[in-house]
Length: 205
Length: 287
Image (cartoon, rainbow over all chains, first blue to last red; front, side, top):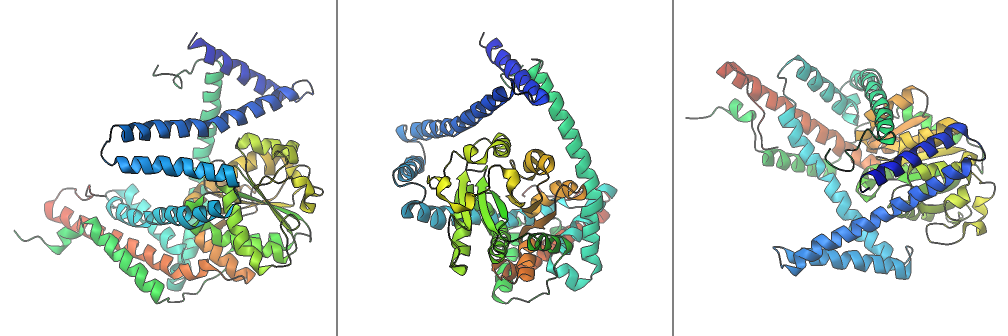
């Protein structure tokens, strides 16, 4: 029952949702609307699961005085402190927004911006013309990198045009094929899950 | 045995690359070159699409991004928001991303001081984040006030705001400006709102998402893509609302050039070693 229960629930809700969308009848409309609401509630609980998991992992590290336990403790204090601040004062209160705008946002932007250094290093290691395919990728990459910034048109008007062509034709053709393949794969996977053939999301089988 | 400089080029320590990039960045930021910026077709199309909207039309800002992406996307979002205010359009935002409400508050803080005659709840509104992703977008097409629970980002009832007049479903908006970085994002909006209900959409994207989104533009499902900091700079130029994007263009150009130079140097070293050893090599493991 531990396995059959979730599969039965998935089959029933999946079939109900498909039927309600396909038929679009006044009888089935409330069913789809109810399932939509349930979905939103479940998604809301995902945040709660994350908070519980963070508390468990970091709380355990603090209790065991593991290496760097101070940072685990700090995480718990900040996590619950910020939640309480938001709950008490609302998301519009000055302290809540100032912490977000002046601490969290600059930290996140800085971390994200440092990616440029890693991309530079990774490009240097990876872009080697070891064969014809790699050479084509290398040339296309260089043309797009230079053509998409102001330097490209300063060197030659042909570079931005070449970059546009690469993006508009080979890229679109390749991406469209990948996306259509992924979409068909998604439909097949959904059907397999609804019919109970796909069970790997529950366990290792 | 002495190692040739060409041999070293094949496996430079990454710290040299980081140091050189940092140096180039600092030099260019402190001494801007002022490379000419041209407005491309995509940004021109986006500008003209907003320009053609009748006064009082509602524009939906889908602020589906987070603080990490703000540096890349905010300049374009701010310039478009200012353009909307200048055109007397009404801007309402909603988000499927938890930080979306805070992102819209930041945009309002940047834009509002330049338009002191514009009021919250009359000319712009922040509905904030709602969970549910694509399902929530679907609910916006059935009953928008109900889908947002009748309140804005700050918990105040939206029925009191004049901006909500005539907005029952999201199909009532004249245009969607999607500021997207992932899922839910542009494909979800196209699937649920813009395609089935013929609502035009312009999407503001980070550079990394452009290739994935190009097929939607080619098929006519998007009006335009305003791509990355470059798109933001172009929009600042065409709209006349100068901001941070234009000042970042030189550094972006020279950082890209630095990476290209290192790639070329790496290949010189790779071919030198290959020629010398008569076998394939190259590509260190200390990325």
